[in-house]
Length: 589
Image (cartoon, rainbow, N blue to C red):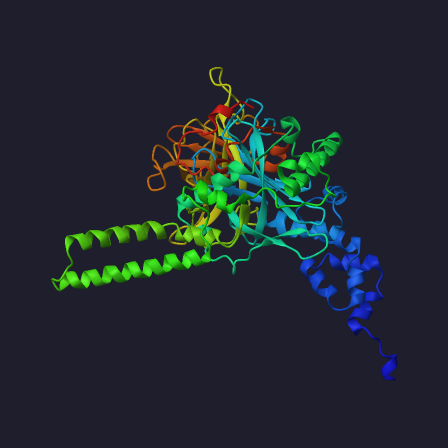
């Protein structure tokens, strides 16, 4: 064989190119989107072949975050299945799940779920459910944030909130990075620069500053500076929602909803591109400035520092002053030790200089953070941080504007009770008294762990939401701990209400104790019915906690949307509270 007779493409590539597209689509189901991208880099022919819509439709299914019907529905408003797959892989898959914060004890449980060409963070309001039970109740929730998919698969962040006039607003921002295994969702601000391009069109582009260029990270600023920056930005860049009724509709319930949601999405894309002037613009129009930002010099003056933000040279002078101040302090100390201290007048002057120097250097880190840009805007970052936990509940830093992801495991063999459960106290389920027509909704995370001596397995029911008026036990405390390998022979103390009991296990449930350290456990039994209900019964008091598995996404889709809190509090309520901070919004389902 002559050299000219050899195929120009590698042998493996030629083999793939000879296969029908149907066969390649089947093969694509067994590889990841990353593998498809790597394979397309091998040669131009493979790149053209793997760039087909059919291949990327299959990859959207492989991600397993949306059913096929919704994937096809979303594609109508996005440029290609490849762009859609980018959004599903980079945004939807890492963020979908339950995110929490410690404060208050009766709130800050946020469920992130797919919306309409977006993902939505929904806070579950502490509440009561009526006699129809959880599945038939209108569960109340409040929007926290949205990330909308752009035409090219890009991510656009919006923080929900309420302004001083109690009008619902959206606060546009930027997604600054989402790690695939993220466990912390951080609300921050980001300095940005405007660079005038030397071109005929004189377009303005936004330069996103990478970590290497940022001299001082936001997370290392003092809490007071972080809080002030977030409050100033959110109080400036809020855009009022024009129609509250249509804006509350974030999930399609019928065919008629799709047209409304498409119109709403167009509105959001224009808000993100043009800011407050969105109503007078079209998506095809050019943007002549960077919207939704706060000028750094105005912000600096708003923080009470008087003049404009000093430039880098001023910063160097501050560093030099700091060094001189230390030198004077060191020299003065030596003179004092040697008994040759200067006169009281000189000492007073030196003290004043040092005091002045400290006041100059106090905002130095804030200046370093702001000096790399000329405007500042809202940002969202999803990171994987070192995080310890107790009984599945993360140990939370209460000074960060952050939500933390719960690692809720799906049921598998030998751990069939793992997952999210919801329920109320009382038996039979849903039965209410005349004087109290509603019952507090509890959400529990069930997980398994080995006992300290490793001799037996424990099933732990960790409380993540409590719908009462006052929290008796903190979020993350165990409602019960059951020895899953130790059967109980206690008889169910009430009429079975037609339920057939399959298993019962001995354990302990929290009683009149308080906090994590003193839960006050009392003996009890966990009963399992053939219909999948779990009932934990305290032996002494005969109190029953009845639980069932929940499809949280389905409950929220048909639930009741209520107005949010002010933007920063809406993302994470940092003030410690044992009472329901959403009390004005409380309604019975």
